[in-house]
Length: 220
Ligand SMILES: [Zn+2]
Ligand SMILES: [Zn+2]
Image (tube, rainbow, N blue to C red; front, side):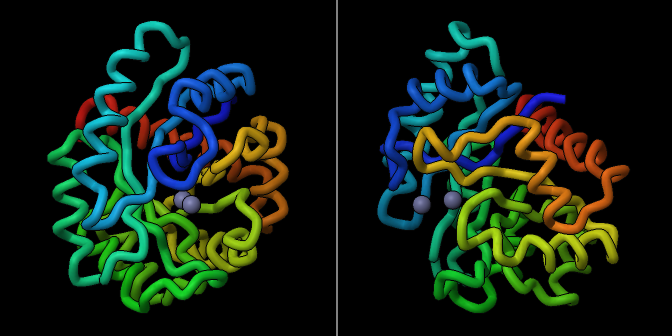
């Protein structure tokens, strides 16, 4: 089992590192795959995504892990989220996250729903996601995130419990902004267990991440 992390930030939004250093640190931390998913909205999507796509394309052959260009649509009005998801994919993002309704930020109500409608790959930190949206996510195959990030992780237990109750896929990401945010697979296991997930389910959660990586590498 090796760490797959599909939610990280670089200097292209509010992260501390250039993509090259983030990737290097992920390699050293024992990762198998990393997606670079900087924050985007209408103002910067056409600036950030193509640069990440082209940088990762050039770096790829020199790193021993899978690196996937992505984007995290963040604090955009829900009605505009579908167009942004489409735009991100058209610009080359292979993993599209929508910054979900975390309990620690005033994310607009309806964001989780819009993310599902838009066919995002993952809703990051979906907070107190409603049962209706959980069922909708299941229907559309949208994956919900368990996060190691401080603050956002307050809802991990709720997200895990509801997702497992209704059979929605979960994945674990770090939402790394700094080098110290990257985690080992051992820490990943602990975070999942601490969210109240049974040990016998952990393998399937890591498996979900692998499926997302394969889908991303195929180009959806
Ligand atoms: Zn951020
Ligand atoms: Zn994020």
